Length: 482
Ligand SMILES: [Ca+2]
Image: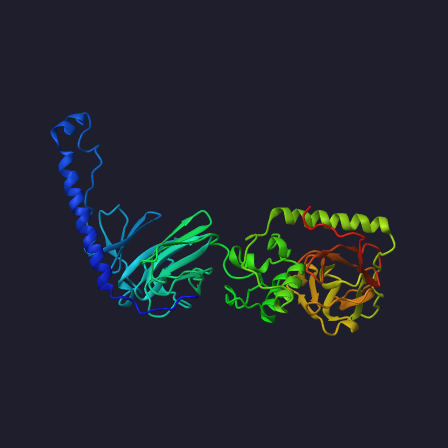
C-alpha cells in the first residue's frame, strides 16, 4: 500500500454533505413536482390513471434513521442504517424486522451491503460482518482489514470480495471474508466511499481524489505466491514456502480454490501466466520465482482448470502408450516375484534423462488386492531433491509421486534412478504376476525442464513382470495444449 493510513476526518463533515445533498434533492423534487401538476401536462396524461403513473410510496419504515444501503437477496429486502443496524423485510417493505444479532453493539453503523454466494456481508464503522443465515445472525470478519477504519463499500467480482475502507484503501478477500489483503497499489486516495464492478474492472470512488480503476480485479497478488493460503503473502515475495505449497497442489495433497488462488498457483507456462492446469511445470516455475531466477510477476491467466487441458491429458496418455508400443524397447517388467508375503519388494523408476530436467511427476497404478504400497525414497543420486508422495488413493490402487530438484538444477543426462518404490504382498497374496503401471491420477505424468517448460516423456509399462518402470523421452517436446 503506497498511501499512508490517515486518521479519519470527522464523520460530521460527511453527514453535513449528505444533509445538503438531501435538501437540494428536496428542492429539485418540489420544483419539478409543481411542474408535474400543470394543467396542460395533466391533460396529456389523462389517459393514465394515477396508479399507472410513476409514483413513489413509503414502505412501513424502517424506523431506523438514515438508510445507507439497500440489498435484495432472494425473497429478502435488506435496509442498512447508519446507527441502528440492519432491517429485513420479506414483503417488499410492508414490514421490517431488525436483524442485528452479532452486529450489535459495535456494528450498528452500517455503510454497505453485499452478497457472495450464500453469504451476506455488511460493511460498518467497526469492520466487516458476515451472515450465512439470511441476516439472522452476523459474525465479524475483519482479519487483515486495517484497524479502526470503516468499511464504506463492498462489491463482489469473480468470487472475490472487495472492501472499500475510509482511510485504509481497498482490500480483497478470496475466502469470503475469512482473511483480507490490501490491494491499494496506485491508489493515492485511501478514503474510499464507493466501489463498482464493470466486467473484469473494479472502480473505486474516493473522498476527493476522483475515481480509480483496477483493470483486472480478479488478478490479485503474484504468480506462485500461494502461501499462506488462501491469499499468499501478497507482498511481492515468492519464497520456498510458496514452492512447497505448489508442490502440494501438484501432488494433489491440496486443491487450489477456483479463482484467484488457482490463478496464482497455475504459474506455468510463464509467458501465458498459466494454462489451466497445475502440474510439474508449475512447481518448477514456482521454484524459479522463489530462487530469483525469474522476476516476480503480478497474477494473471486462467482461474479454473480448463476442459481442453483435461482432454489433452487423456489424449497425451493414449498417445504416449501407443508410441511406447511402437518403440517396443522400453517396456517395464514386473517386479521380482516375492514368494513370502510381507517381504518388501523394490521397484525402481528410471528415466533416460536428457539432462535438462528439473522436476517430474507421475502416478503408479496397482491392484490393491494384491499389492500394498510401503513407501518411496529418492534415487541415490537425487539426495538434494524433494519428494512428495500422495497416498490418498492407495485404496483404489493409485499412488502419486512428484519430485523436484532445487530451482535451476538439472538431472545428469543418461539413465537415472528417480525413486525406489516399495511394495509388499497384500495379505494372503503372492506377487507372482502382480503388475504396476504408470498413471495420471492423482499426479499427472509430466516432466519439467529447468525453465519450467514441459518435456515429453514416454512411460513404458505394459509388459508383464517389470523389474523397472522407465520414463523415456520422446525425441520432440509434446505440446501440452492439444
Ligand atoms: Ca500450469
